[in-house]
Image 1 (cartoon, one colour):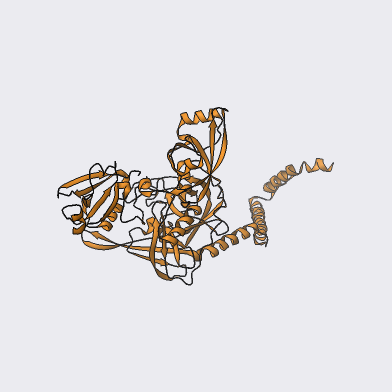
Image 2 (tube, rainbow, N blue to C red):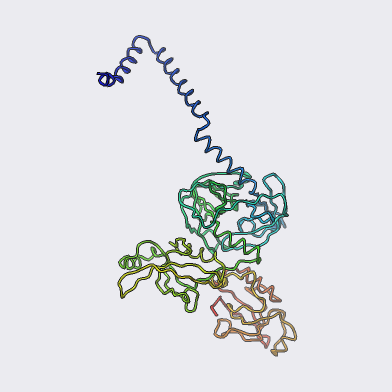
Length: 503
């Protein structure tokens, strides 16, 4: 009987309310509604004020992250002297960075400080310190600065071997639109992104990209700032944004939900090598013409028919006597993991390999089809990497380039020109660089001979080896070819087009 009456409860409430409206009038109804709302507010206030309120715990966690990270964040101001029709003037730009260690090393993006004449760093307490440019790796957009040591709070780094996963909470720090020492939050939207934002001064793609994609607000000025996890540990560096209106995410624009950050596992080997050596040497696997498995439908269909499931990078050419070949890798193996990290795209494979120092071992896991067994299997190899020839791979003259040779461009040996050296080759003396030996069968070797003098690069005059190498660096991407101005032993002028070749 009680259950039967309880079933009429809602109906009785509706009936009572109707009778109240009928006999008490609208005024009483409004009073009843007001009191009910006030009771709701009171109950909500009690719950929100409770010590065990989960939102208070989350809120405090956000404060703790800010307290832990903010002291390691710096604002980077860059001054550059530029020529204008009215004469030289000073251009000022800014970005972000973070303290790497208590010795005063500051990590930021290379594009933030490129071409700077003066760099100034502001600490979170407002203190200003002049910064010295130590070195950079243009291909990963990472630069290292140094400020006077003392009273610095180094950032806490995450374990680079601890995987960052889609959905992880992240926090971006920096100076968006010059709003200094700001913080935003979001989640990891994706991994392994390559969008072609690392470019040279002429807008040409030159980099290795394996970005973390986040939805935390990142805007111009955030570049170089740290990206952290929910423990306040650095997992990456804010680098670029994708906007709804611009072709290049590196251009200035407003945040549109896609931020890009360099992962920590790419930052650490670059920074550590710059500190130790002043330059970055990259690992070389010894493969060529590699392609994403999914980008060739016919190839994908063939491998699917053989039983391959997943994604990877197809090694269409394994170079003879290279590290991969020495270890046992073969043409048309599919690389699925390197050092237990998935390699679903060419950019992921390149970025992982380039982050490993030459001479170190890497575990390369491949899927290989056996036509006799008519099935495939995964095989793991240990590959000891060679050093990547950056001139051939990226068209860039490395910082540690020897002064006496440039075999990639056909110069087996060279020297500053002098009257004594010219006499040795029975040549007319000209200020420049005398080629003392050419690489046989090279592009230059088919035009020039020992004893010829290089006097210019792309119509820019050079008078010694240092000027010659700097002129080549200004060209940056030598893979497109470069013109050399030469004087033969008889004093006749010649022009030779060269590009990097394997030797």
